[in-house]
Structure formats: structure tokens, C-alpha cells
Length: 463
Image 1 (tube, rainbow, N blue to C red):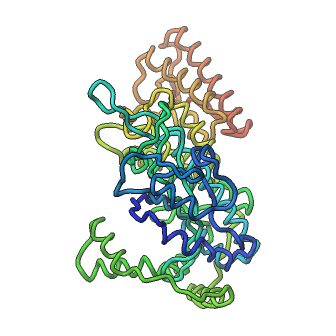
Image 2 (tube, rainbow, N blue to C red; image 1 turned 135 degrees about the vertical axis):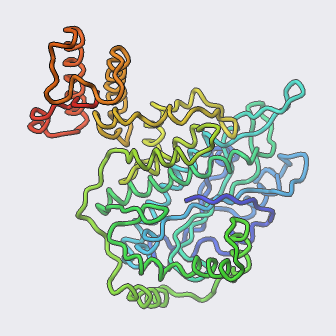
Image 3 (spheres, helix red, strand yellow; image 1 turned 180 degrees about the vertical axis):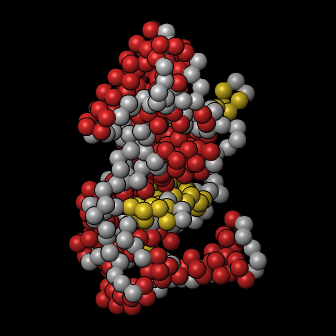
């Protein structure tokens, strides 16, 4: 999940006063970490290694962190953007209750997921505006200037693994000039970047722990998670919901007000042993420990129903590439690396066809959701990039056959007891050829065991 907010404090006190030290309370392997630099433009400014507070403050003020000369010609009320990447509740609980080794592995996986999602934002949302012939055009910036701070606690001292990526409101354009970012791109791509983070994290935990996943209300959670335990570790959310209920409010604006009005200062003097003891007491509410289900093997196929639902929930005016990225990442149960999600989406929504930022064109949702007869014949699309070209070729053969012979719904040739003599020989031959192609595609896609495939006409009623 990713939440984007504007930042007005040039001193970055919220970020620099804590520097993410709390993570070392549950993951001692991360002791001594004081944040990290992120972004291609950050490296171009000569910043690398440990985070430097004065350098970050200089960037937020619009100055070069090494030379001190002004990068911008005017002051801004928005000096940066806070991109908060959050792990799902069950993953945060695993960090809190799984022991130091598990906490270190999950924290590292979360860090990799943040890096992957942030790289997507640099490619698709880093935009500056330039004037051209009386108009202002959105052009790609060289990258972003940012610093990351990882925390593992909420204000209510619940387990809450999250990273604040503080992006300076600076962009280096292709003309060599620094200017403010077109921040609309960060907000527009937030859902896609958040979904990429979550998918990348699921993939890492699936590989490192053999984890399996189940859908809980709004997100994929670790299979085996007790809903009562998750609720016991969600006291901050319960506090916000109770405040909204007391005031009879349900809007997003009311939630922000409730969040701000119930937000207490961070607690000082916490210890790892004290946190562990408190979490153990709360975890016992569910009547069992927070366990990790390693028995189920999640499918490496896309959840087509979840994908179609996410696409349908988009704008009535059409679907952007970023919507497809978000839907694809969310429909992969076992997760995918961020680069794999984009590589798979490239077959359906090529980046070369899209302008970046908020200017991505909208297209009809049907362009990205395969027809039911294709899913019935070939099975769901592969989640990763491997097999996408094969699935598309087989689908194209099926559609060419159906269009040529005017097939609507089930193919009469595939119905049990069909009289083959009533159909042209050319159609019979083409039907057999397409059926053979479907069988071969399913073998290569791992769709069905060969014995079952031979017993069943894979095109029956579908091609």
C-alpha cells in the first residue's frame, strides 16, 4: 500500500528526529541504520552512503547539497512529498512475533519492494513542466531526489512495518534546468506503485518462507493469519473508526480529520523486550499464535476475476496503463517482482504507447480483459511475463477461427453428438488445427496433465 502526502517542513524534523531507530528494537540486524538515499537524481548530485541530515534539508530548501548554490529560483510552499509504503498487517505482525531472524528477512524484503516500486515511480511519474509556444508541456525528469526512513511501529505501538520515502520537490529536466516536480504524477501513480510494492513483497516472502496468501477484505494476507489477532494489532485503525462512528462520518475527508485528531506523539523509552511482552499478550487474544501456512501452493496464473473487477472499478472514461499495472499486481496471488509485473503488462499495455505522468491515455477496459471463451479454453493468463506471447498467439488463433465462421457462444462443432457432415470440410480442418494449437499451448503453459488433455477435447464448446 502507498499513501502520498505533501510536505511543507524544510527542516524535515519528523524524519530526522527519529531516523528509523525503532526498527532495531525488533530486528537487531538493522541497528545503526539511519535512513538511505534513493533516486537517480540523488546519485547525480553526489549523494551516496549514509543519510546526511543537513544535505537533505538543503535539498528541501532548493539548494545543492554539496555546493550550496540555489537549484531553484523561487521558494515553494510544498518542499517535498511523503510516499509511505506500508506492509499488510499480517506481514507486520510476522515482523513483531516471528523472532529477530524472521524480522530481519521481512524487513529486507520490504526494503527491496520499496526500491522496486520507487523505480517504477521514477520511470512513470517523475515529471516536470516546460513552457512551449504558450503552453505548458509535461516532460520526463531525469529521476527523483529522495531519502527513505523505515519504521515498524504505529502511534499506538502496534506492529506496522512502513517506509517513508521523502521526495524533494525537485526535478532535473532534459534541458538541464532544475524546477519543481509536477506532483500530480506521484498522486496518479500511487495506486500502481503501492500494488507493485505489495506484489514484490509477496513474491519475496513466498520464496524465502514458502508463504501462501489469502484475500482478507482489501488485501492479500498471509494464510494462517487469525483475523482476531490481526484486529488486536490494529488498535490505531479501530481508534480512527470509532471516532468517525461517534461523529456519524464516513467520507475520506472525515477519516483524515479523525486520523489527525487522534494522532498522539510517538512514545519514547521503548525496549525490544517490552514490546515483545506486550505483543505476546495481545496475540494471545485469538487463542493461538500467528502462524505461517506453508502447505498451500499458490497458483502462478493471474486471478482473472480479481483483475477484471479492478479494471471495471476504474474510470468510466477508460483505463490508463497505470490502472492495468495496479490490477495486474493485485491479481497475482503469490506475488511478482516489480520488473516482472511491468514486463507482463507490456504485452497488453505497452509503455511506448503512453505518455508518462497524468497524461497517460485512456482506452476501453475490454482491451485488457480477455473474453470468457478465451479463459475457458486456455485458462487464466500467466501472471509473469513468461508465456504471455504464447497465450496471446493461441488466443488470436481462436478468435480468428470464431470470426471467420461467425461463432457466437459455444462452437456447434464441439457440442456432444454434433453431426460433422453438416459442416464444411474446411471448417472441420481448421477446427482440428486450432484445437491442436490450444493443446500444445496448454502443455507449454502447464495447463493440464497430458492424460487428461487426451481424454478431453480442449476446445469443447469454447473455441
